[in-house]
Length: 166
Image 1 (cartoon, rainbow, N blue to C red):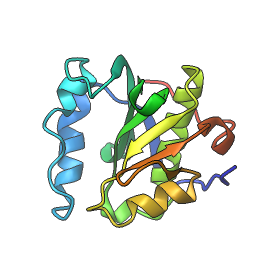
Image 2 (cartoon, helix red, strand yellow):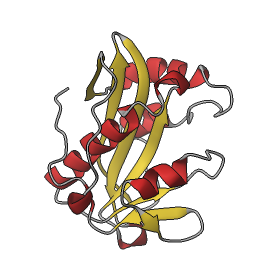
Image 3 (cartoon, one colour):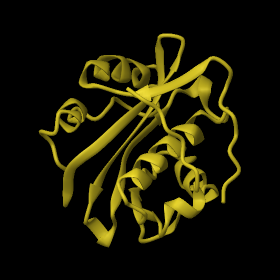
Image 4 (cartoon, one colour):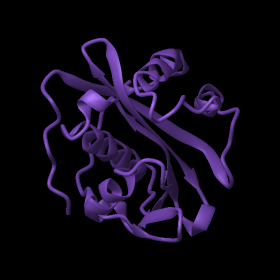
């Protein structure tokens, strides 16, 4: 079990909608090192883009500092690598890194996966993001292959899972 770190004061979370995509893209644009947001993000959220072996059931959460999107996470149900779910996107703005916000986003997604009956969760690790692999590993993910990590049962890592409403 991973200890929960309370996120930065003033940051709150909610389920995102397609209307949030411009603000999510703007958040990512604040960090030129990570590059632009996936151009398929709106289609993914609208259920019009499906990663390999993905089911239509998916969710996206945003982290907001006041009205400003400072991070987001997305996931869907899948059969890729014999998993139940896949973490599709995770982004955290540079000023909000190492403040517990990304961990709280992951806890929200873990709670959603648990609500869907999904326990075995995979993530394609972006090797251009030096903090990604250590972040996932510190939260219980193990190596599946060169580019993939896995939680064999994310419910044991985040037994309570956070829950938030739209």
